[in-house]
Length: 490
Ligand SMILES: NC(=O)c1ccc[n+]([C@@H]2O[C@H](COP(=O)([O-])OP(=O)(O)OC[C@H]3O[C@@H](n4cnc5c(N)ncnc54)[C@H](O)[C@@H]3O)[C@@H](O)[C@H]2O)c1
Ligand SMILES: C[N+](C)(C)CC=O
Image (cartoon, rainbow, N blue to C red):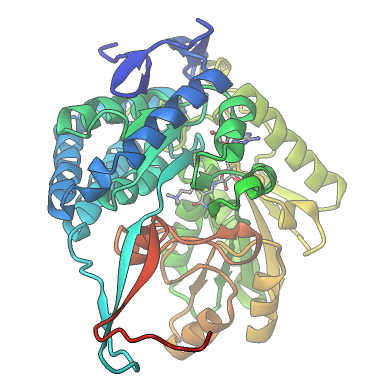
C-alpha cells in the first residue's frame, strides 16, 4: 500500500510514542489491510501543542484568506486526481461498494472546493453606529485550536466537513479519525501537505476515542471540539469539554422517519425508501429507518419492499453487481443482531431478513440480511433507537396530523422525508417536522451549499453551507471613538 501509515504531527510523519500499533481489517473477509500507529494521550498532547503554537504565532490566521482558499482548492484538485485510489481505500476499510466510495470522493472534493471558493468572501460588516463620531464594524476571526473527531461510516466525508471550513477560516486543528477506518484520512493528510498546508496547522493523531478523543475534549489548549458520532460519546465529550467551556459542534445519530402518503408516486416511494435505508447497509446517520405508511397502501407498499429486498445482491464492494456490503465489524454485527432480537421480543413482525445470510461466500464478512419489521408501534425499541444497520420498521397512519405526530415522536431530530404528490400537504408536514433536514419526494440528499445538523438530541450546530464556516469563527465587534473626550464621571 503506497500510503505513509503514520501520524502527522507538526509537519512530520511519526509513529506512536509508545510504539504500539493497530491492525486494520477488511470487513468483507477479515483480512488485514494495514498496520497503523496506535497513539495515546501523549501523542494527542504533542499534536495539541503543535496546533497551539501554530495558531498562537499567528501566521496561518493572518495568511490572506485568498491564499488559504487557494490551498483548500488545491486539496480539492488533488482529491480529484487521486479519486480512484481514495475510493479503493475507503471501500477496503468500510466494505461499502466502490461505486459509493467514488460518489463520496466527488462529494468530498466538492466540499473542499466550496470552502476554498468562499474563504475570502467574508469581508466583515459595517454597522451604522448610533454613537456620533464613531465607527462600528463586525469581523469574523478563527476560533483557534480545533479538535476534530470522526466516525467510521463515512470516514473521509465526515472529515472533509470539518477540515475544509477549519482551514479556510484560519484555524489550526488536530484530527482524530475512527480507529477502525483511518486510511483515507491519512491519505488526505498527505494531500494537504502536498497542497502546502504549513507545518503544525493540521495534525493527525491515530488511536482510540477514550484516550486521544478524551484528551482532545478535555485539554484546556483546545478551543473547539467538532464531533460526529453516537449520542453516548457526544454526551461524554460535552462533559469533558466543559472544563474550559470549549465551543462544541456535535453531529449525532438519528432514527429518521420517512412518511409515505397514499397519493405518492408508488414506484418512486418504494425505490427511495429502499435507497434511504439500505445504502451502505443502513450505516447512515440519516437513514430513513422509520417508515410511516398510510394505511390504504400499507400492505401493497410493504409487499413491494419485501419483493425488492429479496433480490438484493450482497457481496464484496469491489464486485460490480454488489448492491450492499457488510457491516463494519463483528462488534457492530452483534449489536445489530441484538437490536433485531429485541424487536422480535417486543412483538414486531419480521417480514423479511432478521438474520445473517447463509450464502457460504459471505461467511467471512460481517453481513446481515436486509430486514423489514411490520406491526411496529412507537414504544418499541426498534422504532425509537438507532440500530445503524439494514433494518426498517414500518408503522401505519390514517391522517396527516397522525403521521407528523409519529414522525416527531423521537429523541432524535436529524432528518426525515415526505412522499406525496400534494405539494401543499408536503409543505405543511415539512413545516411541522422537528428535524434539521426534511426531504420532499427525495431521501438522503446532501450537498456542500446547504447546512446539515440535528434538532433535539441529534446534535448542536451545523456543518456545510455558510453555517459550517460560522462554527469555526468567533464574531468580534470593533468600535472606534473618532472624537474621544473624557467622561468626567469620577
Ligand atoms: N449527524 C451526522 O451527520 C452523523 C454522521 C455520521 C455518523 N453519525 C453517527 O455516528 C454514529 C456511528 O459512528 P461511531 O460508532 O464511530 O460513533 P462513536 O461515537 O462510537 O465514535 C465516533 C468517534 O468518537 C471517538 N470516541 C469514542 N469515545 C470517545 C470519547 N470518550 N471521547 C472522545 N472521542 C471518543 C471514536 O474513537 C470515533 O473516532 C452513529 O450514531 C451515527 O448516527 C452521525
Ligand atoms: C451525513 N451523511 C449522510 C453523509 C452521513 C451520515 O452518516
